[in-house]
Each structure stands twice: as structure tokens, then as C-alpha cells.
Image 1 (tube, rainbow, N blue to C red):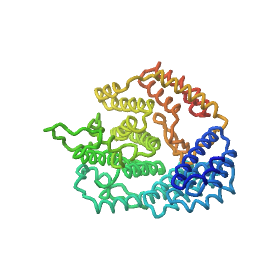
Image 2: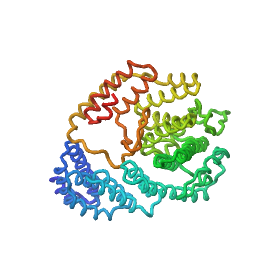
Image 3: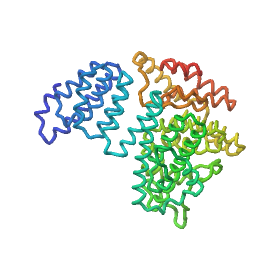
Image 4: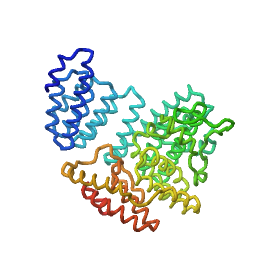
Length: 485
């Protein structure tokens, strides 16, 4: 408070910098209060901050204010405060309404907040797509209405396709040499009565981010239908967009080769690199890995045109849907089609997710599938990529620290956030009526990894992961996970 009172004595040229420091101090204090679940004290501290700080300094604190008021049960005050957010940019308004949706006490309040989040960005197609997809996935996961969930997702598809069609009309499409007639033909046969789907709008101008969204949408749509034929068709549409994620990345990496980004050395004199390409048939993905040079260029670029952090802002959610697609293709007898989503998961594990258990699980699932397909050499090569199947000493120490923290926070546990999406276990098929959070805890991944290790006969390593997972799942209150242990 003393620092705030002294702001008026600071020269105008330095005042903004001082205000940023004070805001940061508030953020640190609020983070501590959140850790202690002291919601009412935090709400009071925020009232003080908003009263004393000038309005231009408020935006960084709005997220805290919304979250603390939700947790403190300040319904009327929250409603009044949300009227004030209209002064903020639409994207920021949508983000705050999404937070309300994740923290609201009742299902109706969560639904209204998420609908509002999509409405405030009505004139911003890409942002509206993000909110419509989140709303559709939440409706699906919550089991409120499959029809409403499908409506929201199809509306997002239409927005994406219109945007892509516009981009394709302005872009040079000569770079889309990777698309094949067979791929387009397979894709164009799939359609739905309430949205138009045309393969010609998926060209070089389409970003990996947009392809990921379309793949994810069609995987949710596949789970919404009760028809096995419709489920397969929608999975094939998603499979097309998964391939486009690689194809667009390959085209972007090839373009980058002409002027490599910082940190990527140019090719040696006299060496000519052929354009990067990706398989066009399901069986061609058998043992396929992106060239090291292509991976290096993608990592250096890190844009929405290549597979990476920028194009996959919600990697856990993407991974959850990809895992489900692997199971769906296997159950439909389309084992070869599982290789493509596994290739995406493997790349994500190494470059985006960067969770050791996730990468080990991906390797094991890939190797197991390759052996089923008779590709024992490729399976052995995949298995050799893992450094160890057991948790390292460092991982055990980190697990012990997090276990202590989880036990300390156990009384403050709350219901899963509404953006949680139903995600089938990588190894065990679950009914559609049992939604799970897309953000898997490490402990849940450890159980999945142990199950995969048991399939491979690695009993001792599996036991170590289960011993590490069991107390963590108990501290987190994950009864289903404990039962699986």
C-alpha cells in the first residue's frame, strides 16, 4: 500500500515502469494465496489493487480477479465485474469468460460463460473457431447434448473451410505437390448433411494449426455418432487432416531450406536436397520418420506452418484425441491407419510435450503395433530409441517432491474444469459416457506406461512405475487410477 501511495510522487516518465513492478508484486502475492486456497483474502487484495492502481495497469490482474471471485463464491460481484470487461479487447473478454466457465459452480453457469466467450469474438473468425471447438468439446464431455455439441463443431468447420478457401484463392498453390489424387478422392467421399466439406480448399495455404483443429473436430464428431459407418468415415476425414499436418510442415520446411533460420547451418556446397515429402498411402507410414534436417528446420521456425509449440497450443488435448484415434482405427480393423497418428504423437513427445513417460509410452505403443504388422526390424529400431524403461533417480526425486505438494493441497481439490474432454485411455477402451480430462496427470501416464510395459514383458520396470503412481493417485483423489494400479 505504501508503494501504491508513492506512485503519485514518481515522475510521469517512470510511473508506468513502477506500476508494472507493483502489479508483478501483486501477482506474486496472489499466486501464493491461490496456492493456499485463500480465495476470500485474495478477492479482498484484488479490490484494493483495482481501487488504487490506474485503469491501464488493471489488465494483468483481471484473470486473478475473475478466478478468485469464482472460487470465493462472489456471484453478484462477479456478475458486476464481468460487465466491466466490455472495455477490454474481444480476445481478452473471451479468455476471461472461458475462465468463468472453468471456475463456475454450476453447470448452467459454465455453459452460459462458454457461450458468451464465443459470442464476444463473433467478428474474429479464428478466435471464434477456438471458442466454438472448446464449447463443442465441453458439451460432448459433459454429456449435456450431443446434437448441440455437433452443431458447435460443424459451425467451427464451416468457419475454417471458408477461411481456408479465401486463403487458397490468394496463395500460390503450386507448393501443394504432396497431395495425391487418391488422398483427395478418399477425403471427398466423406461428407455430412449440415456442412460442406471440399478437399480442394485444403491446400498449401492451410496451416498446421488449422489442420489440427479440423482433425480434432472430426474425431469428436466420430465419437458423437452411433453409426459405425459414420464413425469410420469421420475418422478418415480426421486422418486426412493428420496427414496434412505433416504435408504442410514438409512444404514449409522445404521453403525454409532456401534461407535457413538462425541456428540452422546451410547445406554444404554442392549438396542438393530434394523437397521433403510424406507418405501418401497408409502402408507407407510403416517405419517412417521425418528426416533429421526437416525436424531441425521445423524446430527453428516454430510457426503455425510447422509441427511445434506454436501450431499445437494445447498438446495434451491434441494427444488425447490422437490416442483415441489409434484405438478407433485398431478396433475398426484399420491397423495401418494407426501409424499416422502414432507418428504425430512420437514427434510431439520429443519436441512439444517433453514428458519422459509420454515418450516411452509412444515408443512402446508404436513398437507393439509394428510387431503386429510383421515389421519386427522397425519395431526393434523403435525400441532402441528409448534410453531406459525405468524411472530415473531424478524422476523419482521429482515425483517425491510433487507427491508432498499434492498431499498438502489435497483438501483444496475441485471438480475437473469444463474444458476437460473425454479421452479414451491409450490401452483400455472406455465408454463414451465417461469423459476424462485431456490434461493427463503424470501419475495416469505412469499407469498407462506400466500397462504397456507389461505387454512387453517388462514386469520389473512396470512395477517401479506403479509404485510411483499409486501414492500420487491417492493424493490426487483419482480413484479410477488407483483401481487400475
